[in-house]
Amino acid sequence: MDIMIIFKIAAVAIIVAITNQLLQKAGKEEYTIIITIVGLLVALMMFLPVITDLKDELSSFVDL
Image 1: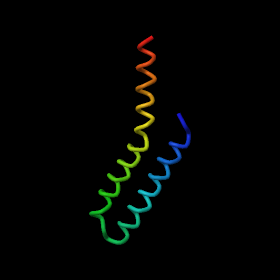
Image 2: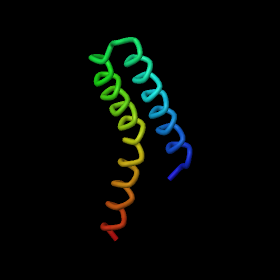
Image 3: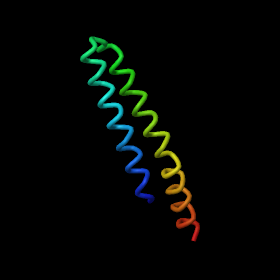
Image 4: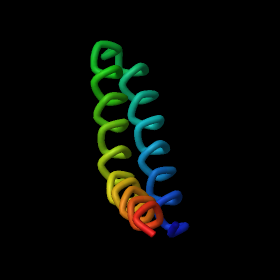
């Protein structure tokens, strides 16, 4: 597994946390849950290739 995927997901988490703090300070609490869900979806989409690679590795292992 590439270590860069962990750093990318951490960067998304930091951006989401900062954005949530800014929205709460601005009194826009209703948007914080949307930003959190979007951040989660972005992180999952970044992690999806790793999951498919793992599935391919496991299926090739089982076929032996």
